[in-house]
Image 1: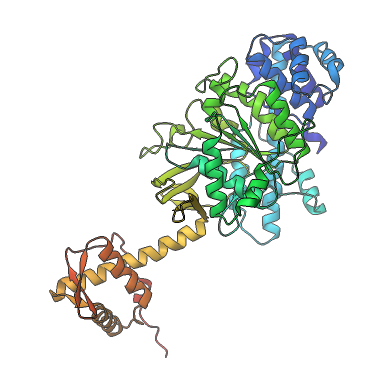
Image 2 (image 1 turned 90 degrees about the vertical axis):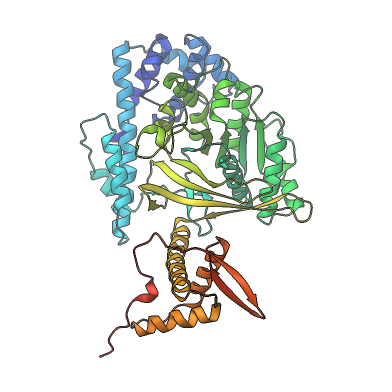
Length: 540
């Protein structure tokens, strides 16, 4: 795929940034470290972005920044920086080079989407998701839209293509929501369990034998994180001894870990992501082959930066991501950023950025190369009360997260939390229901509510309490008289339980029998008849 890279443009861009301090501000919103084909170039761009947050960019400062992050040798030493600094171009050339680098990155993304579409067709599927993703990439491209698909088809025929699939945050049915090697984000209002979701993903990864890194920018002592990891792990069936083995063991000087250690926790609330911390995190990710990293607290991470950065400024957001987050992605990890949602999110009748994006600059959502998940509270849970949170997809760059449509929004799953403190130990069982499971539950509930309306109407017409068995027999007689096949017993049971629980009827005991007495008329808000009410087919 050599026609989808341009090494001279990458060198021109970096040399201009090193020789003219004003260039980085002109290109930071046009290109990211992950857009460079050469990872060494991406690492240098990240260092330039970090230096730019503190003051004017100079080659000497970039060398020292790379030395502090222990990346100087990897990029070729100070000689490589000196050579790039002497390869200077003007500002106009730098902007054009940035557009070229970004354009080629988008074309490579298009190639991946095209391969995925072709693979789906070959397997007899409908590539509607891949085609939508390809369309989105084409609409955001800065080029003239023309792309040579010949090399892509060649690789498909050769069987060398690889489809990018989400591989983390697994549902009960096995499908996942978060992408590896990409920048992902989960956002939500307070009590939306977004940090719980991130920790649940960590536990899942550890249970699969994979180490994780948790960067906590919200807490200074780690107590809350430890309590929640403990509660989630025990709720998932992990023993105390096994969990302790995963968490124990100091980090060695060479970046290695003690046998069995799987969670590397860094408190960034005090010192932020300084050069030493970045170097340690990158060393752990590379040496331990960490595939999942959590950055908990986007706003807090930017505020603790030295100097502080502001989340509502696109320049600051792009500088922070380029200098601190993209290097982790480029090192091979999927990153999940935890963030707050815009205050206007959830307002009816709007499709604005605020209705689907995190708080602050739109550069946050624009930077997502994996999936952006919006956590919406149905029932606010805690360590003592059950909760239910719906996870919607706001952006899916690769287009492979499984969803169902609900009110023009893309539901990817529902997180259900069930605390169990019966033995004096706080345990929280978390389940992530797949969209198919949720759709099935909705369908069953729909028919149950329609059946509840039939029960309520019968009680109203009869005008007296009725035994449950009498209700079932009467409704079945009516159904059969109209050519139906009879009610399913579990449907009527659920219908009567619903009416009782929600005070549409009350239960009156008469010996061993339970009668239902009408309190108010219930009418379901569905227009369809119950699936059991389809007429019997004529056998002749």
